[in-house]
Length: 399
Image (cartoon, helix red, strand yellow):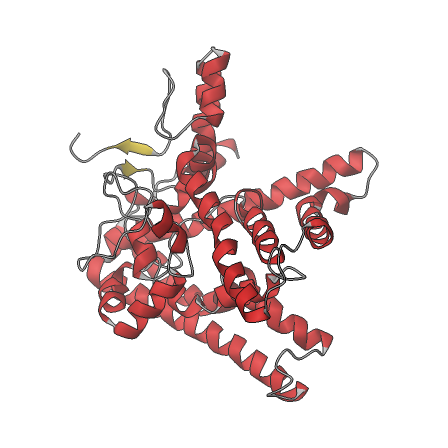
């Protein structure tokens, strides 16, 4: 069993045989049919899905002036189904085009390693929450108190925000929502900026999202390993604070829905084969400009040295990137993407997700100075301790 686990842990898709790659390509082509349902339920469409189904279940109608309850319910489910079908079709078509452009032997190893890295991240996250539940149970609390610690804490935090965050000025709803969208995007900008500056967050949570050299909406690593801790909860909480400043309650649902409307264009964020189309099509290009996605976000994944931290914000119009000088106009030619200078990496889903934690652990063990250990955890990505080892990068092309 130990030998088998070791083989799984160290398996590198870069060394897969041709017949294995062919079988994986067929299997993934079939699985992509269900990707739209997964994406709507648990990923980029989940905010819109929860908003719509919440109103359906509660028999409330936010469009009461235009539709009756039955019409709203039908519209909600049709929209959810249509988006799910679109996402699956987009994934299947871009998968086929990627195979044709890059070839199975080059594309499938990159795709599989990064697709499976999402499953590894989800599994480790579930294990972590199960561990929290076990600790709570051993301490005499209910298992759910530990397993749901973050989600319950998030609910309590939002309730406290509603009570104690002051409304500086109660603006008309449209203006409050517009300002809320602008200021609500600032926490997301900051958290993404931190993910590229902090050693702990970069190696432990975000590098996994930037390692694919051929991108596909399914074959790219998780945006944030343990996203509840490092990404989504802090951003949503601060977005709620921002909107509460201009209105008598946090406009959280509205900001989530408006952000989710970009889901149709969001698929161009991480799709190499559609870059030229997304750049040249005026409707896709200029609508993407508002949401800060599509080719604008694709530029964020460039492997060009010196451009590691560009276009890190979102809607509206990458406002905070323009304010802080991190905005870049998309280039006519598709940029090369991946880690800076495109190093050779281990195409192992475990390495993609967990190698950063291995590196930090190794550095803490091998460097005995407590000041060095402090900077290992709290330092910048541009700083490196005297003794270090990268468990993901194997070398660089010129070497």
